[in-house]
Length: 120
Image (cartoon, rainbow, N blue to C red):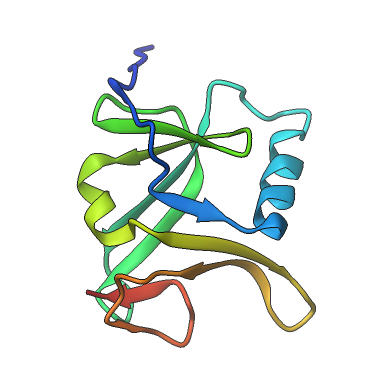
């Protein structure tokens, strides 16, 4: 089993979270089977209807990840993804019609109706 340690800790948080998102993330981290070595990974990958899709999930950081903390939430992001995500705000919608994390990205030139895909 190999473990990798992230190399850089950022003093600036590239993304922010609303109170609703913070509460939901803390709830997930408080689950009994949560692995405390993991951080919330924020990133992008190619694909989706607009060209790029958001990544949001818990992972053990990789060497290329930069570390940051927001309101007690340990996070990581590949440095190369900051150009697409810097200044983005992540929210949690808990309603019956709209449930899940949403992304308000000032870098997106267009977004898809699904809310998880964007173009720059």
